[in-house]
Image (tube, rainbow, N blue to C red; front, side, top):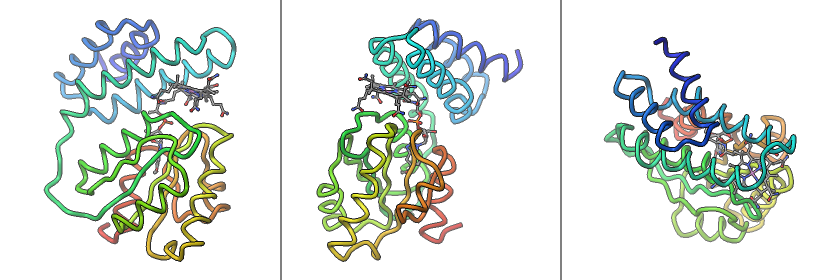
Length: 215
Ligand code: B1M
């Protein structure tokens, strides 16, 4: 079986919401030496996009979004995250969170995991994080980078509110800011005054390394 066939089988398994079958397919792919990050980006994330499209078209309901979220998390926690090899480096500290009003955390968790694997210390503030909570964390942990994730067009505006909160407190200049998530674009990131936009977790890690001057 080619890698593309493996990715397509995992996508099919995921979309049938058969937890056991999908996990078996992922396990098998990992045993064949397929890159865990490629499994995320070429099977799991595209399958999630299809779930989102079917939800938008009224073919799936909220219950399917919940089940898909659970399946994704189980695969990450049980199979993928344990296989990512941590670099023995200390690249800096990142405070990360999903912005206020937004409960989507799968992408943010992947970014946080991959940053840890790359050697960053990551303070994960979770979901529905207010501008005040981001500010408090910046004061407390003195991070090099603040990372924000948003998946809803209604919540991405909160990223700008966080930046304004940091400016108001006089600490904006002390941190670099990276934003990402399905709702966000490079243009939006520029418009709100973020330092960078990451389209996926691999890019986010590369950008964070650049922001702390290690690549
Ligand atoms: Co929701 N949801 N959801 N949902 N959900 C979307 C986002 C949606 C696009 C689906 C759709 O209609 N097509 C839509 C938003 C529409 C819009 O705003 N334009 C939507 C909606 C409407 C909603 C609700 C309002 C539904 C309702 O209640 N009626 C509701 C809102 C709840 C809330 O947040 N207040 C809701 C709820 C949920 C669940 C909780 C059920 C569940 C999330 C479970 C969880 O996260 N624990 C869920 C899910 C699963 C989705 C979809 C299907 C999948 C999201 C996902 O996990 N993708 C999503 C459709 C879609 O995204 N196409 C959808 C996989 C993940 C790996 O990708 O998060 O994009 P992603 O992360 C990527 C990159 O974006 C990037 O790297 C990651 C890895 O490559 N990245 C960063 C992410 N953060 C980054 C940060 C960075 C850098 C890169 O720097 C810091």
